[in-house]
Amino acid sequence: MSSSLHQLRLASGRECSTSYSHVQRIRSPLQRSVSRQELSHRRPRITTIGSKDAAALYPLGDDGADSLGLPGRVHTDAVSQKDVGRDSKEPEKQPLTSNPQEVFPKVPWSLSKVFQVMTLWLLAYIIIGHVIVPLVLSCLGVDRLELTVRSHAVLHLCLDVSQLVITLSILWSCLRQYRPRSLGLFPVRLRGLWPLAVALCCATFPLVDWLAHQSMGWFPYEPDASWASNLEHSLSVGDWVTNVAYFSVVSLCAPIWEEAIFRGFLLTSLARYMPTPAAVAVSSVVFALCHFRMQTFLPLLVLGVVFSGVFIKTNNLIPPILLHSAWNMYVLVTLVLRPG
Image 1 (tube, rainbow, N blue to C red):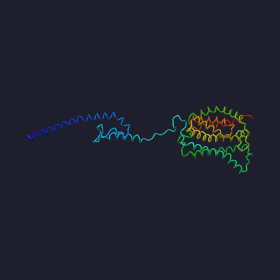
Image 2 (image 1 turned 30 degrees about the vertical axis):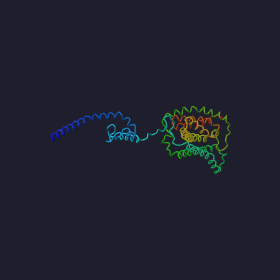
Image 3 (image 1 turned 90 degrees about the vertical axis):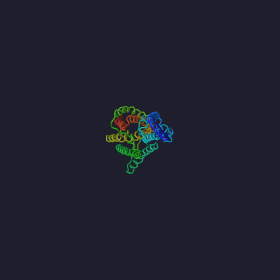
């Protein structure tokens, strides 16, 4: 009797176990489906937090599963991998300009570097013209008061060539560590519509010439009798050799080094620390003052603004250089052809 009862209990247990297993097989896919649907609804919240926050939202149970019934590391690992992928991305490259509306590339040097370069250049300009050349003439036994007009032309040639070399050397030695050409600074391009811009700006020359003549009346000028006699006086009394020498020098050397220092360097540097109109005004004032003649301050100030404008519009140093050269030739031609 007891043996039969024991066998009946075993059979009932196997049936219950079979039924329970069958029910579990039916419920498991449904439970997994519900859990995954709930996970899909909540996943956007998971992907926006870190692994520690995910662990706090979905605490692990005793069996290592989280509140959704899935292994707890599924969420944290997925979030961690996403965070790692996001953090390991390379930083986006900054554009050459700090914002798309800026005119020039952002210079990497400070205002102290700008002051250093301009001070070195100005000292070299003064020392060469007013110390070295007179000293050399004195050592050679040449009286600067007895120099002919042609000799003055040769001196101007030497002075402009030396200024060209010194200016480019100062810019190169002070800025080479920044590799300015690779940053888009001191741009030189042969292609583009800049010849049209140069031609249009040449139309301002008669107005500037008129302003120059008015300035001569506003600021009376006594011709200098030293070796550094002004260019206009030398041309008005010189022969054709002198004039050719001045045409060659003033139209080639001076425009290159003046535009390189005033527009290529000074204007571009100031544009980083002040609005572009203010940078144009300051650089143009410095350009006019560095010619050391009150009679030419106003016309040179206007020319500085014109040269800066064409440089801004074209982002190219060639147009202001050619425009500067054209102005110098205009002055030479008008002085040679003007009667009296």
